[in-house]
Amino acid sequence: MLGLKLPTDPRWVNIVETNIEEILTDHAWCEQKAATNAISIISLNSEKPDLVTEMLALAKEELEHFQMVFDLIKKKGLILGRERKDSYVNELYKYMNKGGSREDSFVDRMLFSAMIEARSCERFKLLAEKISDPELSKFYHDLMVSEAGHYTTFLGFARKYAGKMDVNKRWAEWLEFEAIVIQNYGKEETIHG
Image (tube, rainbow, N blue to C red; front, side):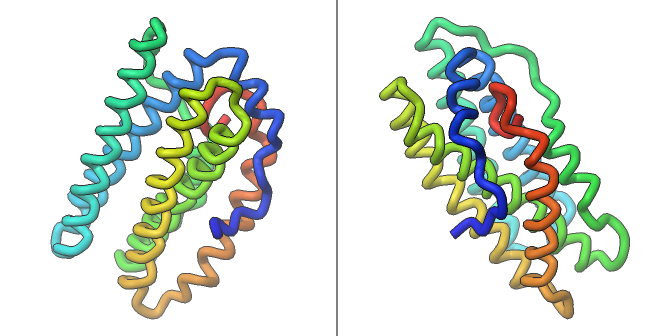
């Protein structure tokens, strides 16, 4: 369903399990960044009421996820560390078309956002299926369902406001690029690392 060209090596979960505090801290900050992304999209596209409505709901949900991860960190007696840099997202950001028409830039921002949500969903599914902690398994299963919804929301808006752009062609290019980028990840106890 997600269309990702390169699945995460299941051994990534073994790396994650060596440092649960790190994966949870990184995950919390990913949720915060996702909320910030939704708010940024609103500020750049306030003339689209349907988009504003959806992005407001998404931002609230991402902040709720941040709260859920933070509560889990506290429950496990761990500490929320400092915000982490996300090299994977930064590489995707560099690929995003920021020039051209406003319409084209909007579509690429939606595809960039969809790509992050798709990979997060794929990683959450893997955690749900493979992590040995039953509480974390259920936690990541529930989040996986939500992330899949976010992925389709972003793709839907890309298609709705595409104008003359061939969104399916551009999405295929994103998938190819992401497959190259992700080859360098899956070696750290972070959501995208």
